[in-house]
Image 1: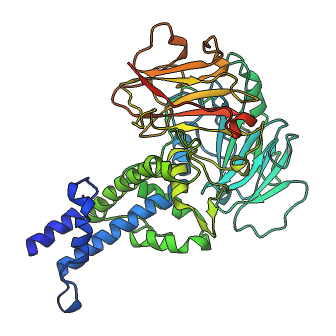
Image 2: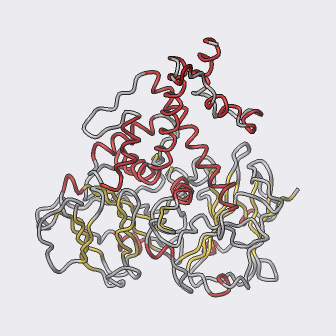
Length: 488
């Protein structure tokens, strides 16, 4: 019996391995039937159950913290390469390619991404130039506001004042004022272009941004706009036990939100406590390593199998295209609760939310049909060849693009091409009927090289079709996107 219990204690670290008996709940049965002589646990039973409890809490902590860790991974990765401070705003001046590791970026617009720290700098002013588009989120990726045409400045530009969560002073007039619920604030600007060879105008627009502490415009540090294009930078959240080290750094720096006390209790039980150094022993570290792997795998399962069963996630009932952000509220509130699963799906594979993102606005905004599968329901394989026939008259006021993403990291697939995408600005060759065939595979189909996105053998991937300024035929489904078909 003692030997069996010791084996169970070890197995608690590895039960995530797929095993035929798992379907019969054998592991759970063993947990439920551990020896409790005279209703007291044996020493070995206690150890098994305490290890299991730590594992379960660590897995839930991994999933719960994904919005913050996705953002903190971006922050730490960016600051390591480009520097930190309110005055540092990296801009992907020649577009963003697969050398930037970040979840589901768009290679067909100009990006700028910055990270503010209200704990260090206090209230900050952001001077936004006219015609700029973007958003501001706190570090749980809860929206403060849209900026630009969808924001309070209505595209006219203006001064935004961002207050810390514990700010107690008076609110000065003359600003669009928002209070963040975290010290960290994400600044995310996006700009469109019409010619991939002429990117200077949107870059210069972004470089008109000014950020400085309240009342210190003249004495503030000068703005720095590093060119992030083509610079190798890892802005992903960890999928191993170092996830909890990052989470501990975040918890140590951030304010305590009363709504988080239960989950902070979860963190405390695995050794993550504000104002106390996170120093897990070897046994705890081993459990956390497996918990992180399980949490990461669960997030991927939710993003594929579960998403396809989620009401409203399938864009067409008879096809494989899904909407990864089906929430009608940018904070995932529904029926008096937070949709935790949808929140995991979103932030395991993407970042940033805003009020405008959940709206269906005909002729404005954007939609992102996505698919992991081909027409037969099989996952897209990097070693196979496929074709997507985009029907004629794509319903957009602006442009459309197709991008391939690494199934593991959700970053742009590093396929050796300049960008992992093809957009309508690239002028892919159209068919006589106006449709456009986009090809995917490890080798280019002869005669269709301009319409080809290379994939990598041994690497699964998924596809997002972006529609900017979607028009009515998309919403009423009189224009329907066919599935991706496997070809020989």
